[in-house]
Length: 148
Image 1 (cartoon, rainbow, N blue to C red):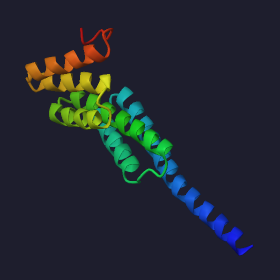
Image 2: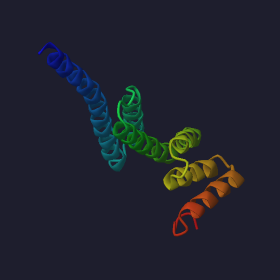
Image 3: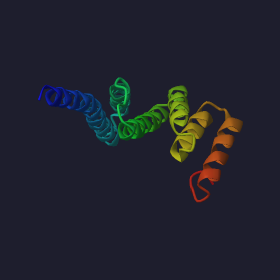
């Protein structure tokens, strides 16, 4: 009986770790959604702060399962790409560039990250680098209208 109870305790412990990551993801998604709402309302600086907070929230906890690792990466990507859009809207192109570069470290084939980084590079008057990112967009998605 005692070994059964020990096994049960271990299962609860494993679930507890999973719940922390799941809660972190859920909290980050909520913050990201608030950021999206703020952006739509024209509160771009507030949106940037919410995206930053969401990214930090989901990044603080190490994933305990492969599923959580993928979910975490998905939320991180969304936060970074959305923050990049907000930063570009405010003319904060270096911040937008940094967000997109970090997003591309997570997913080197993310079309939106390349496109938004190209916009940031254009804003920083780095035209050749922007052109290279747009070429990457078209390589990954030949039908991408904005990059054509």
